[in-house]
Amino acid sequence: MVFDRPSRFDFEAWAQACSPEFDASEHKWDWEGVFPYFKKSVTFTEPLPETARKYGYTWDMAYAYNGSTPIYSSFPPFLWADYTIMREAFQDAGVKAAAECAGGDKEGLCWMPISENPMTSRRSHAGLGHYAALPPRPNYHLLVRHQVVRVIYPNGIASGPPSVEVRSLDDGSFSNITAVAEVIISAGALHTPTILQRSGIGSRTFLESASIPVLQALPGVGANFHDHSGPGLNWNYTRPGNFTPMPSDMLDHAFAADAAAGFNETPARGPYTLGMSNSGIYLSLANMTTVHMSIVNKIRSMAAGDFAIHLPDDYKRDATLVAGYQRQLSVLADFYANPKAPSMETPWATGTRAVAIMLHPLSRGTVRINLTDSLSQPILDYRSGSNPIDFDLHLVHLKYLRRVLDTPTMRKYGAIETSPGLSAQSDDALREYIKDDMQFSYMHPCCTAAMFPRELGGVVGPDLRVYGLNSLRVVDISILPFLVSSHTSSTAYALGEKAADIIIASWTL
Image (cartoon, rainbow, N blue to C red; front, side, top):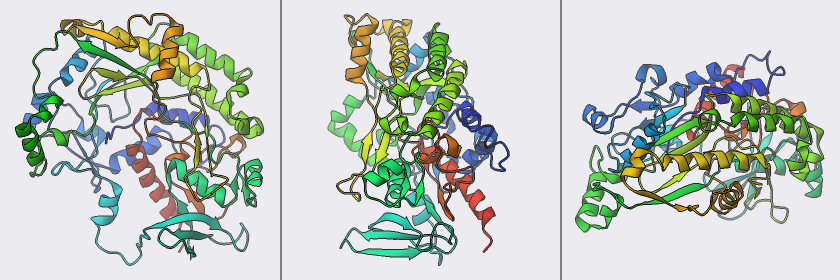
């Protein structure tokens, strides 16, 4: 439910990675090209003055917001009482509180909006805002309980728009839908590539192994798969203080009953309005370690050397994927060298665990259809940590959180590390702990139909059209070339708003 936004440097890196090939395009995907759509795509509601004073919320309405869509974000009217501990501890460690982190500058201690209706505190999402809340339209049809199987060009790829084959989830029957203008695939980073693969669009080697006729050879389909990941640090308090309210209060019948009643009031109040978290830090590599340039130089050396040994076998067989990954390594090295570009996120709401989420992994995996049942769930190979430099980054992040445990605020409450534990002092011991504790996915999969030059393994161009195919576009998180420094939902909405302008402007009906 976190509805934060990326750093401007995420999109500057995207533009850098696609230069010079996309420089002449009228569609710009740098920060200036996408920021207006972040503002447009959401209606942010300011908290009540008394709520802002109670929790210390800060924001900049004019700079970061001013949208008026039926997609809502807001700050919750409730926080657990111990949220202040981590906030004060990070400030002890020198992290500065940012007044607003949604305007492109994302380095420091951030208040993060959450995607909920400010009156009901129910989840705000496209199914409500862009469908259920709208009056009926004669040109808007939603076909439920059907699975998209593939797109079909019955008269060849140079012909008009493809038809779409769908399968009923009720009786298993198949039918075709014929488009008038074009087909837009928006099935997400896991299912967009599988629709393309079933259509014969993807790696020639893989499609032939699946006995699927090749419609268009685009090896980047289902490649470049990655996600946010990272380990955590756990501790106990020997002097925990007297904080109230706390999650343990939910065990009290009267407190729990009042929490449930409050959630059903208008406006809603109480613990159920919080969601997961709305506090977090975003720090660059340079602000966590004095050896950040040694890691940057290691990435640059890898880009100039035998980097392909860390890639999936599919990559090694395709020169465009190898070249594209080399370009990405060079760009990400510059990103990590930037003292204002976030390397790690640590969100929190309550409790005694802090996670160190790596925002820009170097490891790459694949998404493939299941060869035994192509209509079943795809086969995901995350390959987390397959690039060894990712563990160098995890190590920096974990060591930083360890230092935060030794701040005056944490000492005041008698914080004692429980895992990895004080016995794990060497880098080797910490690396083993990271392997055991790491969450390999924070549910932000991306980048499997990347907007990238075709000669570098790209799948779509800056106009969102699939290379070599008439009247077929992709609009979802799969088009990112690499992950952003945020949870991905706000980016999905911004991409959708920008895509709408691009697509509508191109129609000649």
